[in-house]
Image (cartoon, rainbow, N blue to C red; front, side):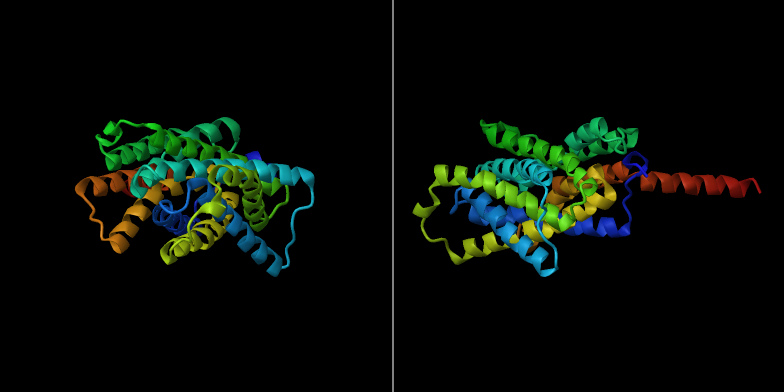
Length: 315
């Protein structure tokens, strides 16, 4: 069976993994917020991907798996590390150094808007359907509602543009990552290999720019935030990420970025004592409608119910 005949589906298990991933990645904005004032962005990202590589390879070796041996696989992993880690992590962390964690997460939720276009142009089984386009439009409207009309009046658009550029990179990574299944690389090898590639790319840059050996000793809170960022929001998150990518497709996977702002806001309410306003609730509701439209199943269910009702009337 060719890849063009496989239609990715979102079943209950995939939705459960998607929700869990949204919490893990929503938490990453909280961890970054704690650590970014003490650790420069490039060094923080290097710690994130380097620590994650150690954790994931330890898990892989403990489970009896090994590293990929083919040079072509490692070249693909290096590209994936650039698109899915090095570029977006650095751009978003830099943006978050100038913006709030909630706003950075909300801007990250534009990723499916770009993914629908990229996947629709490049993947045979990710068609640009009316439902998906409408769903992404609704989701983007929800993001606009959450951000509020005054957000762009701060006078400096570069942090906003950096976060949006990170979203574009994530979209490209979601499409590029589909190839690893055909290459015979397991999700664990893919996750570990791509953070290894991004570590190799970032290390010389971070060492040259940040001189991390000159930084003061971080506090316990900062160390804890980095540990959470590495183990929970990166290592565990990427295991879920590549599993969802394999079973549900690139566009469905990137739906998680609609949920990340919701998770980030809920974590803020529960941990930081933040309050949800009417605009926040309205934005989350619109995002939910966008998710339903992109997934398509609620509409199909309503059509089946309507068809069933008509059938009963005719008997």
